[in-house]
Image: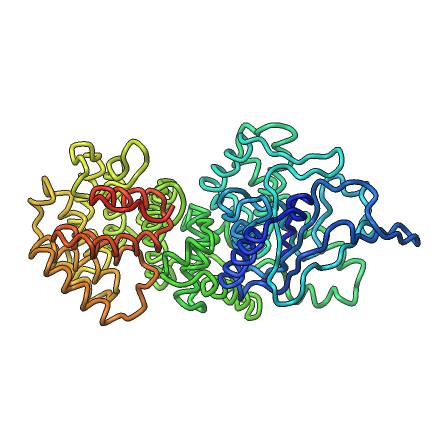
Length: 588
């Protein structure tokens, strides 16, 4: 776990002139923030106004401010996070106050400083490190933190830091498309996953500075890969210099070489696993790690998903997932697990874990758990590419064929799953004439192949259900009896409350809404609070109640679904349903 310091800026006048009700709103907002991130917050405080400042310059100590302060450091949080993505999410969710927005989605965090002795910022040589104004914490203990953060550029005298939108968009795109390529290529130079991830993150940070100054490179992915690999090489070069200067440590260093994956071994297996990303997937699925850790680590390292996105995929809290990823990394370091490319005979042993990873990537890409986009097509395409490559290595694996068929059938419907505004469109409202016929044909062929030759596995059964949907001309013409039967088989090989929920939906289409509601009641009785954070449960209940004309009950269920849903396209759909019922718009 790394420590980060969130610095929160505010307007001096806004703080001084804050009305009592604003003061109360700020305290309430920070109390909510503290409840959400209590496990991650190590400390924090608010600071008094600049009139309490003490300036230290050398041996000279002077009280009081000397110029009018338009903006001041209002306070700080010291937080602990599993990685930079989680730290950024904590920072973004921190509320403002005293003239600023209380909902952090309205602006980004201003400063997030890693607590690991990082390199100075550009221009920091001209700034004093210790001398400056010190301000005391304000407010009596127990009142909560009264902090504020002001959006927009930070004014450091004549200096303003701004980042053009074009650079931000390019970096966002590079993260979605290139993260796996950059990291997997860097592993072979870095020799360890931790160092490779750190160098990859540093390359993206460096890109923010260099691209803003020099413009976008012709090939952002190649630029990031070269930068990350050079950073890893520099780290090894510095370590080698250190060993020559500290001969007493050289023996220890030689006995514990930093490279877990040596390039000679990787090159020897180039023909066996030709895709760097695929090598990294198998590396993360080392049998010494628990299955949950294997999947979470792969989603984090190979796919670049945030801790929050992975937590949604696992139906666990963000703090639980952060701890899981951290424990996996600690085990790698403590046990010195050799992260290497598996030999051919080892591939089958790790196949199920890899299939689980690819399936979760597909599910996350098919319906993104958070954000403004319903689908992350880049993730779906990434999983399809990796599955195709893996099928080339293991062409006789039926579950691989099934997973690829399932992915292609879902990809074929992508264009119809959102409307012109990007809002979610349910299956019964999709224009099936716009489905990609070539992908449907290839997907159905793969599904048929996966069902031959023995008892089908969980991916073959899921693919069979998808094929039943694509083969039907409409929802009403779907063979719902067959769909329910396949779900029954799926529950035998893969018992899951999510599968039970999907089966309940199929029962409702086959036998009517009342039967579907009975299935939902049994599901909730059986699983208690397991699905408390899963918005599809109340959303399904709301739809069945709406079909029965039970308006008041439907309203309550739709509101509950809205409260749990973090996907804006799905929230738009839920609000539309409320509007159609002549109800409120739900929470903003």
